[in-house]
Image 1 (tube, rainbow, N blue to C red):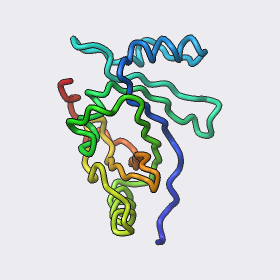
Image 2: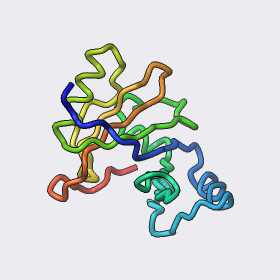
Image 3: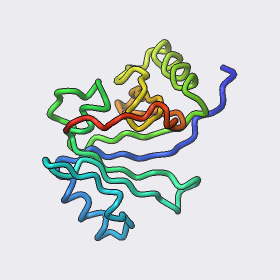
Image 4: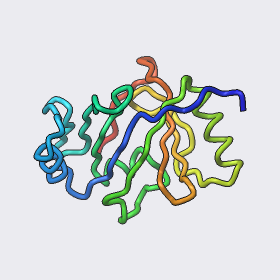
Length: 152
């Protein structure tokens, strides 16, 4: 394949109790500013931190299991999402997301979330690796593709 390599960019944990997870990682010493905690009337649903120690400042995110089921169609309506992990990789373009997803699924890897235009403005897809770990593939975000987040 004549494509640019995917670059590690994110570790995302699906949390059964995001408030407890946030407290744990803050106590561990992870700097998570309050403005990076997304709360709704139903609680905390997304927490984001940039890990300066990781090349290119990879993201470390915590998501509620309810929210994870919204952005990953392969996890919709599952009750075993607590502690699941998504390892994220960036690719250089929206088309590259579709190409990588097609290449991996044609090779026999299970697609969890077909490529789609996510509300945060990126093109996004998820495939399982041979051990069942979810691997997200994301393009750069484009403001023209942003929309309101879903209700959680």
